[in-house]
Image 1 (cartoon, rainbow, N blue to C red):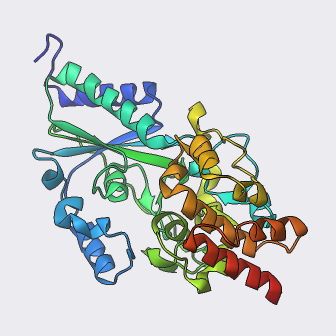
Image 2 (image 1 turned 45 degrees about the horizontal axis):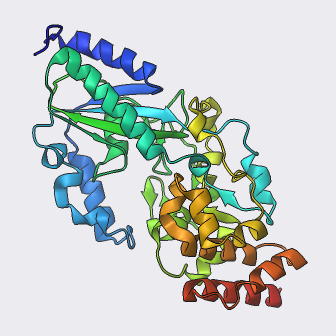
Length: 355
């Protein structure tokens, strides 16, 4: 142990809260590792096939719901929240209502959050080790099989809403989560209680009916899944309901009354880049693979690649008004090298012809 090491876990917990705030985290809490009910819920969801092509959700067995199997020696999970709502960005309702524009989920307007949060979490773990002595730990930001929402709920950061996103009473739901799995037995926070009450605005707000019942999500119908996780063609019956959403979807969060308490992002990396808060679809569809690589590198969007980016935009163009600009953009890729892009362009052109 270091000269300043202490075994006073209450004092270490106070330090944790101070250091987390200093590193840009909006909230921090500590949870135990018992997730038996959440494991049962996950098993039922997987058995129903609602994870679609996200094979990684089932690949790791019980490791996802049993933290000590993921990182041996884990006794506590430290959960943190970092707000991402991009200040000074275009109003989402205005963008969704202008079908010549593309809608990008607000979390993806700026730089990719994974590296930023992981770096800050690593610093937080190092600062804890400086006072507690060597601690077994591992840092996660969407980088391993972790039931992050359940752990954050147990750490007091919020409750899992009817749309299955985490909601904080003073934070809404526009935030990222990260975790430190540790052997350090810090005092545990009280789990958050649920406050959705009788409100169910999020359920009818889903454009594709992916929220099948309160707290039940069929990912196969979710626009975030369709535009980000799905590698092949988007099912035809879901293309029209997608509207102009080209990367992710925020509709269930946009109608949630708790988001009146949401906080703007403090970190400049989460500000909108490349005018993605209200981009013109025709302009985006003209991007070459080199344009996509240059502009989206360092963004969460980068991982879907240029081909799926064009696939998504083709669907949005098919749902856009039949203006000369829209039609010219679609015809410019009618003979695209990608069969996936050609298929969605053909659908879009047929949709305009039918209209």
